[in-house]
Image 1 (cartoon, helix red, strand yellow):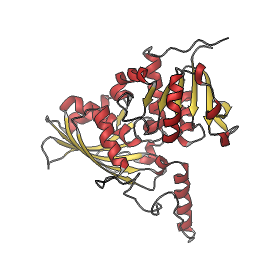
Image 2 (cartoon, helix red, strand yellow; image 1 turned 120 degrees about the horizontal axis):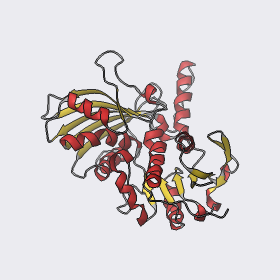
Image 3 (cartoon, rainbow, N blue to C red; image 1 turned 45 degrees about the vertical axis):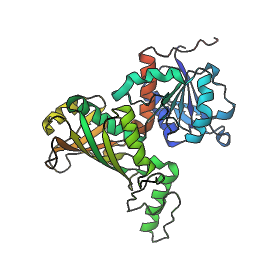
Length: 345
């Protein structure tokens, strides 16, 4: 059977399982899919389309006949294993923050900078951006092409799934505890997340910003344009799936809300739902399980010259992680930049 041999590292996690699902949904041309995880997860079953795969140990897997590794096993694992995997001629598409700012590793959102993926040949590693950055740059790119963005102010409303399965379990257990008048236990988050919001994602830095906020700044500059000024406040909210963002944009050139709406309607990866009536916008609940970056509440900002406000929502497990990784693999395949290895029959 022709096609690419694809390994999923971290196949038992939220994003790893989503990667398997999306590979099957989009009918990526595979000859074989291999599920990899830590040694303690050997034999754990995961789904790939209508098939069940049993996980193998990443530590003992030989990548020499594998074409693509979708890596979602965390930054420390990626730091150790991605160079070894790349040295075997297998392209690593990494979902962690380990390689994003490496100048020799392309940081790619296919709707924005697909051509950059060709740079994988330097280390055989391509980085996926942070989930909150991915949906933001999909919305910003077509507007930047039209009117040149000077400055962005963004406040995020990020779901707990961005912090992993334990975080989702904590929201569930805390919510149940509130309704049953039991003690609310906090483990994953620094404060209670049920019926609350937490303006703190990742570690604090010397300037008072968090690492998540810094990532949005640095990654947007690398992916889209280093001249863009961006400031972010990242907030965890009691939502299971999908990140939302309130975005204020200042442009060099005039642009109206109507023009922006028309541009975004035609832009790849964007879906505009923007009726000025109750319910005429997208919420995280509706975006869950969908591929698009949804944009609503597009309006002019009268407090600044050439300013716009908009509301941006996307499934963080899909466009923010798994879907983007598979789309990168599709770029490599569709543009002929990566050929399947010859394998013994």
